Amino acid sequence: MSEIKIACVGDVMCGDSFSQIGMGAAHGLDEYRSEFVPSDIVDIFHGHDLVLCNLESVLSDIGRRKNSLRSLHMRGRPQAAQYLAQWGVTIANVANNHILEQGRDCAIDTVNHLHKAGIKTVGAGRSGDFQSGIDVTEINSAGQAIAVFGVCLLEEKYAFNGGGNLSEVISSIKTCTDAGKLVIVSVHWGNELMDRPSLQQKRIGQQFIRAGAKLIIGHHPHVVQGIDNSDSNLIAYSLGNFIFDSSSEATSWSIILSMTISAGKIIKCEGIPVTRGKHYRPALATGQIRDKLEKEVQRRCNVIRQNVPDKEYEERYITELRTLGIQSRRRLWRNLAGRFIYYRPIYWPQIVLRPIQRRLGVW
Image 1 (tube, one colour):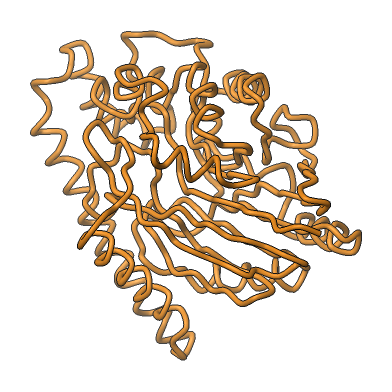
Image 2 (cartoon, rainbow, N blue to C red):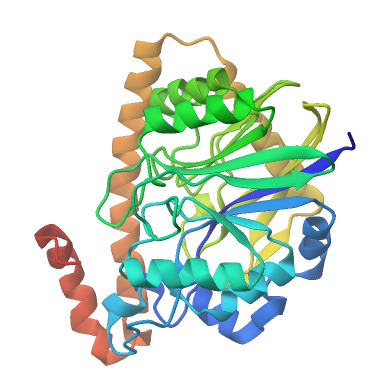
């Protein structure tokens, strides 16, 4: 059995978020098209047998209304599926908390566009229509059968869990493992902007491992969290934002996780730092910036290995999470105020009303 090279990145959002409307990732993709991701990153992807990402936006024009902020929020163009394929992405997870943002028809349309581009999907349900039933995407690489799961553990309005609950996923992992398949779980979990996993993430990650999963690849926090790995399995709690129009400094870098697997063992694992450039384009970190980010990744890995009592760990975690929430809301409103004159006037009242609509459950 030959070696298998697998690359994973975190969140990929090909639209504009409401606070970046007309200025976000979709705008950058419209300008740069297939060259949005630079060639040195494309070369890295093409040097792997499997490249996995979490797609956190629909790629569909169904129901698009150019004057409606709600209709444009986190909506990418169908052409982005072709760009992803050209860059080297081979499989996309769609089980996350934004995939139903524009309705189920748009989500199904997104899966169809990905498939037409030659990209496999996980997390869309057994029939690919965002209904119940776990879908397991199977790939054969270098004589090794690989089973990939897409799971979302966030219970939010526009989330889709992947087609089954946690116990059903664990049962399916065991079945695939018993059949000799190498299992990868792409999981949407955790809390935004936290640089380390919650106790719940750590416990569920271990449940996946005990069921037989080889790789657990996390996303949703939008920042890099630590990696817990041995030669037999690995948990990457969060890889950060590969493409996203967040303006937070904390989300300004991510990693490409590159792994080589042979005879069921992880014989090489490397986190390649990526920074956020102009128009939200990813760029490989170099020089002192790369050195700094590699040290920060190592620090975050060390944090999850520390022997801290669960109660103490959880108390610190909750305190920091509350502080981050307050800071995040303040930063959002500062950014909105600073950009307000650059938005089209038709969006002004829609931006102001969005918080009220969210509280009423109509956004």
